[in-house]
Image (cartoon, rainbow, N blue to C red; front, side):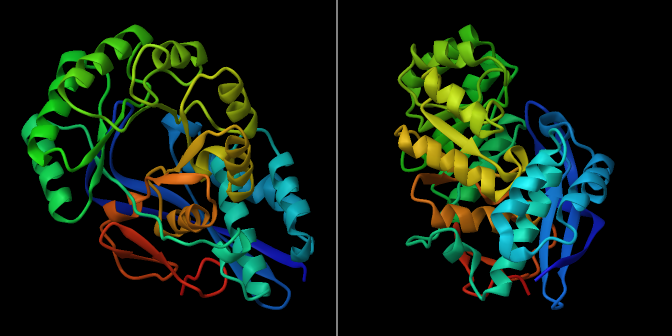
Length: 353
């Protein structure tokens, strides 16, 4: 069944409230939605978000890559040769991981619809639906405490706290959030590359004396593998790579150097489901567990990540709350939230309406 068309559409999605990290502050997200059309009139859907500070892609560059070399790599191909087409997408141009992810997701959706399979079944099955954390973005102390309390009341028992760039204030932020939610809630820290390795050790040690932490995510700049290893060897809290791992090659290097305890896989970083699975498989062979995460993305692309999270046994932690930040929470199928749990449809493909 041949692919006869690939089209894109740009969309602006407002957030319910501002989202602030050490890297950026946003009130809305821009996405490029992708539709792949097959000759039997079946279609597949995908989506990519623009994140200048992480992937280096703008809305315009995502659209240009998809409408240019990526489109050339897929048009006229038979969807039944899915693995070959996915490899061609990755080889179509350098970088442009979010653009590739959007098309990768759409190809998986079209393939699974063609054969009547839910995406999670094609990816390997599943047993327990993913239970996400909730992110507490950087703000003044009282607002962060209020957000943490509200999230706990809504049933989120794992919180990811955004920190970075302000050593003493970061320690106070985490201490105050812990006071607000008590010891029953797990806390994850995400510094978004905001610390130096020495400051990270100092901050994490200070926090370890005050409270328990589940993990610390990307404390130093993405290219500082030595810094990650330095921190990991000097603290008790598990260290997770995020911006440091875009590709299977990045994952291999981090594992080989014993630089981290965990890897955070995001479809927009790695180029889609195919490469995400490769990273999770490689990490599993080395005994390194993975988190599935997301940028600030659409319901569509987070649904794709949730299908992979449900299907892969080495993905044991989940950070899929991005869709819950959107103003428009109209049911779109594919993934339905029950409190902090992403329940997936058994409809073919992504299961979207």
